[in-house]
Image: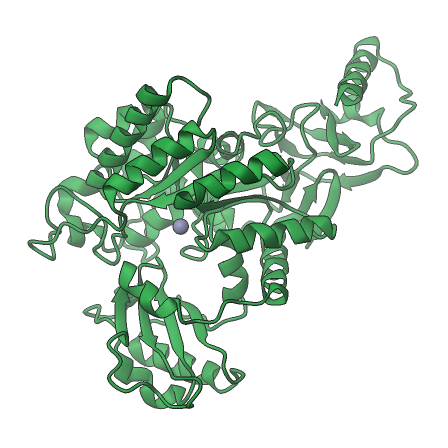
Length: 537
Ligand SMILES: [Zn+2]
């Protein structure tokens, strides 16, 4: 680290003295375009020893080009720091890439057709999982029924989830006897905790299957310019070990920060004592918990009833006394805590719990996170900055849920839903991600969503709750520097300053000049990690 600083220092001196010869050239120089560093905009960047060596004009960077330097001519294209997705279910995503895709099944008939087609090739004993269906796409939004797929799945057990992961259509199957469990109480649509009754009987994937799922997910991420993910997947000790295996084998090309279940904080405390916190490639020490369910499943916890389900205010999915105790204990153990909260009451409850932990455990650089922070009371918005709590948000959900959220919670509560602008104005450090596979992993779609708030049904061309739109630079910052901060890596990642890791993305278009409506048409041309090109279109 010291040596690197010294090199960066001499480089700067070289520029100051106008030297034209640099004895130790860069490995990579990217020039002739629009390099958005996170601080300002320049035209070129040089990387050496995996670190940003210099940013500046093409002329300033020219001295670092040696005979072995790889040079990428941008021809006006844009460079950003590598995208950091602050909330994914990454390994599940890898499994989903090889499973049935129901996300855009626009009718119940299409839903059934895709499951039937997929069931034909499923090896014996394997479940059909994943799916990511969305009944809100179906006229009248009926929930799927087991009767729809009973005849087409024959002996194949099925557990396909709604895209938010808070509902699943389950048709379990008695593998030993090869017969369906007729009248099984756990068949049909299950919500939240009830899902666990069936999912517990799905065989755990083998290490080889996990490794393969990770590699598939990693390839997908790198093709989209995602150089780091925070993995908020739930069964994550096995996932953390999957990443460690990949790291040991030299196959961890991107960076990952996997969270593990909050109620295992004692195990993590010991793990950190034994193994430290990892490195800039693979970091651990984050604990994930849940307050409530989701809006799509009407299980998010609100003060007032759902507009389309009078009498229902959602539900708490974890015993709140236990959750509060675990938050205090994990925090006292020096671990980072990130808790899922969607409804306004869930967010208030969690902000109160965090405030209590701060009071009881005393000041510390703890970086509490609220995963989703989706529906907030006006009073809650200011508390994020006051308490230093990080909202880990997913802008694509806004343009997806925006199609039907008002029907569910009414016109008043949507005003403070996905409140990006209000949170930033109140001083909060908003972080962006996708919740993949709930939303596509593509960061450009998230940036488009945050900047335009145009719902995916085209019904809101001027933006849904347009007061909460943010600027392109703000969206980029949420996806780079702020997400790096949320992982305690802002001194190495998220900006392109000399000495930072050489993670960058070359985009096909200059987003700063593009009509925001066209952002989804842009592509990632190169993804670079530690100065090495790891994806090229
Ligand atoms: Zn999630």
